[in-house]
Each structure stands twice: as C-alpha cells, then as structure tokens.
Length: 110
Image (cartoon, rainbow, N blue to C red; front, side):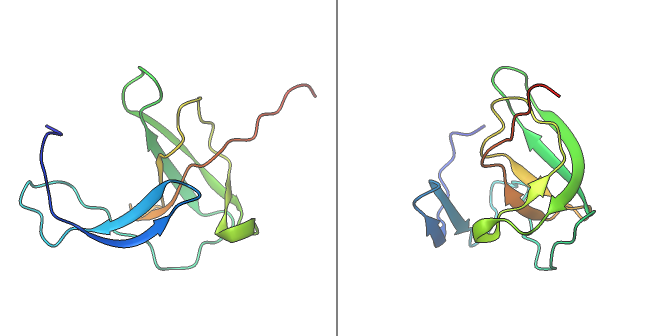
C-alpha cells in the first residue's frame, strides 16, 4: 500500500521539527487528501487527533483547544494521548488539519 512514488512540490520545510509541507499536483493513487484550516483557532474549539502509537493500531482521541498563546503558533489541547503520538495530525470539527502533535505535558501527583 505504501510502496507508491508520487511527485510533489515542497511548499515549506521546518528543519527544527523535521517537518515538510508538500503539495501533490494530482491524486492518481486515490489517497485521502487533507485540507489545511485557514480560519483562526479559538479556545474551546473541538479537536480530534489520529495516531498510531507503537503497536496499538489507529487510535482516536478528542478534546478541545485550551490555549492559542504558545510560542511560534503552538497550541495547547486537552486530549489525552498515549506515548508515541508525536507527528500525529490534529483536526478541527470540519476535518481540516490545524496542527501536529509535538510534545505532551505529563502531570504527576496532585
């Protein structure tokens, strides 16, 4: 399934995070393409995170946007994520990509 080569144009590279935004000129393999959100994010907006943590298969987690005041456009979400979600996409309620999981905050104690 993943042994397919597609031509793409690189639109943006973020070297410090190891990420690239690419645009496919067409979709001959029939892949599901994701739209990137352009509307401003608001605290309280619903989010969904999809990921493949370790050997668990596709895992879905939901939550809300808790803060949009992070450095460099980072946002804080309330979703509970197991280890291994780094690089997973964050979607808004319209199914548009709004971000990528970079790190998690761990709380211990009370």
